[in-house]
Length: 293
Image (cartoon, rainbow, N blue to C red; front, side, top):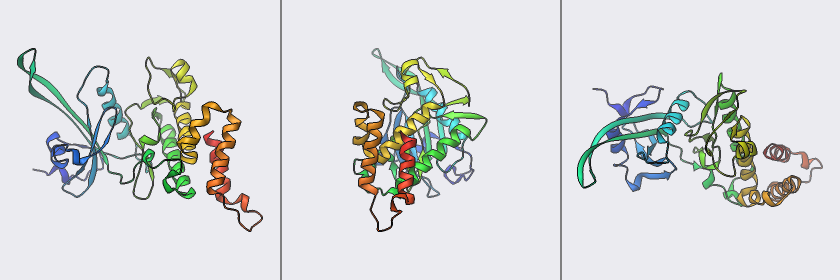
């Protein structure tokens, strides 16, 4: 019989729930590395030595469309292969019966165990690295992160006939590997669209602060949804949370000047060369500032 954990296919694996329990020490607190709106994330190690992140979805309850979230994330990630998009290693979807107490009686209820397994990324989520001092990230590291996010998003929108709209792009959903390469993750809200398509939703999706005006006002989803979220993310990478938080109280031009002042005070070092102001770092800062705002 084949050992599940030694399977080497490039396609995502169909893991058993029992195996996932074993490699996460029965989903212990010591193995927990994250928490989200749809489930808890645990660290696990396969027999092959590969370390993976296991997102165990919450059991169903009213107000949480976890079935749709599970299917969106699993099927959409199966469609993509890109260095700036988190790799889906496998999944689990099993149905079992469990004896539970209901209205004073013991009955057998049907329980669904669902999990998604991803490559484990040592750097964690980008939001944990961001602060007003940006946690020591130099400009070149920031530029690399921003460039990688842009390339990943471009692949989602233009890499195939049907575009994938992420719809929840933000620092918390961008993971970093040991070399600070960014990978877009958490595709639970993602949708497939024709590149020119516009649609509407009945309820709120996404994260406040990262949603574009046309969605807030009319619930319209277009490719600009992700682009707006990207702009917010870029500004937070460059200016920190405090700099971005002042946007609501300022005109667009005032905020642009604030971001430029912050960036130049942090990254611009006057050199003895007359053309120092046009050095690659300075010009790239100005370029990304324009993109983000």
